Length: 199
Length: 105
Length: 122
Image (cartoon, rainbow over all chains, first blue to last red; front, side):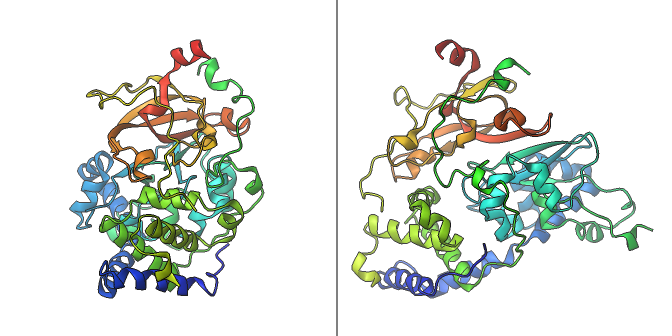
């Protein structure tokens, strides 16, 4: 559960940080800069990468061949980040990403992993009962779609390139990116065209 | 696919480690709690410290994970996510002699 | 707390070898995950999920070569190892699920053996 940390945990953290500072190993400014940089990453980056792939076949090829290079091409620094792999959904195959061992997540292009991605229930169930998990999200796959669960166990990080939904013909990159949510990029949801826009 | 793929699982497979959660029966009927909130200030600060320690070569992410996996099960399940990180980082910094246990009191 | 100089109970390799130049497995090759449980032998850190031990899958592709996490976790020298994406049928793992569903997992070469060899030695 997303319970808050115990009351004494922040003090323990500050004790460790204080000891490291006292030894000249880090500064408050470095911590603040690192946090600010981490705060800047968000699923909007991944969403834009997907939207562009729906519009530009050359970009799509780059994205699928080397997600990290594609991110760099969009101005995202991948220095020090793990390689980024992109999982291409097809009319017959849907991808769902989980990390059963810890919480590996493509943070450079999606930001902090949400609590649920790190939860014991998701880690335990996504790999065993992926369709049950999808159902909890209200995600209904078209008949004949196989689920491929990707357990992110080692050095890559993975995001999903979903199918472009019908009813988005003629949409701009911005508008397309707007329907690619964090849940879509992990694979627990499909991009949905709001009914008011579908008309 | 071949027969091998549908063979029964290895007999008497050992009980997995606590963190090795894929398929864990104890969570089979637990709904995924859809909390979308970003980490709180404590979590973000732990997260930033973790990145700095790795960047400065004081700790690898693999060491961090080893430390998390060494947390006894009852505590692993009770601590919050970023508390597990803090527990592991603290233990590692002492283990590696980067800081002294006495510095932390 | 973990002992300061704890030794890793890494996967039981036959012997340390210089890193091979070529990957041992190619796309489409059937491989068996070693039915090995180093976590029972002492402190260790491994990235092969329990549910795949002893399972047969198909190599999808080589992802690259990466420092061995089993060594990195203890601050030991960690030579690069081949890392593969390996595909498994999902329902046989749990005796439940939807036919056609799959699990795709990153696995290091030293956790894999050719399917045929594994069957003979079993």
